[in-house]
Length: 245
Image 1 (cartoon, rainbow, N blue to C red):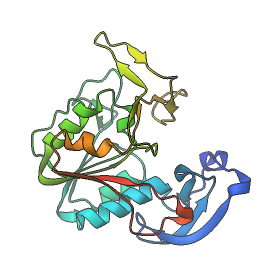
Image 2: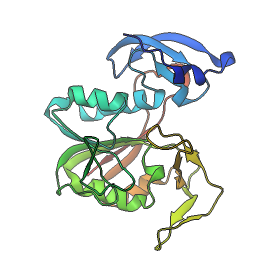
Image 3: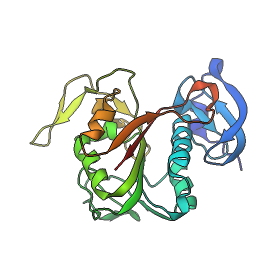
C-alpha cells in the first residue's frame, strides 16, 4: 500500500517536485520515490515513507552487517521506517525513546525510556546499535558514545546518522551546565520531532568530519564515514557513520 499523508504535502516545493522508480533498501524492492524539495529528508519512498537519510542508513547497514536474523540489535527509537525494518528482520530487537520526566529503564505507553548517556543495559548486550539523527541532540555525546561502546559485544557495530556540516571540526552550539541549565554558545537551533512540542528538539552541536576521531577517542577500534553503495535518487544520499568495537 502507498501512504499519502498530510505532512508529506506540507513539505512540497513544487519547483523541485520529481518522481522516479528506484530500489528502496527498506522495502527491498523497486518503489516510487518522490523528491519534494532539495534535501535528504524531502526524498521519500511512497511505500514505506523512508527518507533518503533512512535509505542511506539501511543500505550501509545491510552491506556492513549482512544477515540481521542472527543479530541482537538496539535501536534508539520506537517508530519510523527503520524501526519497522529492524522489527521485521533482526533476530532480536531492543528499542527505546528518551522521555522527559521518565526514569531510565522505566516504561511510558509501553516503550522503555533510556538516556543514551546512562544506559541501563548490561555490558556486551548487543551485536549492533543504530540511530537516526539522535546524537546532535545529546548534551554529552561523548558519554553517549562511550555507553554505546559499553553495551556492544566485541566486534559489534554502531551504525548511525547525524547531520554533517561539511566542516572539519564539530561546532558546539549549546552545553548543559552542572546546575541543569542550558548555556547557549550560538543562537538556538531546533529540529522538528513528532514526539516533542512544536518548538522541536534543541541541537547541541553541528558535527564535522572529526566525529570519526571523537568516536575513536571513546574506544572504537574503527570509525569511518561511509557512502551507500546503492543509488539514492537525485544525489541526496547521506554519509553514514560506521564504527566497530
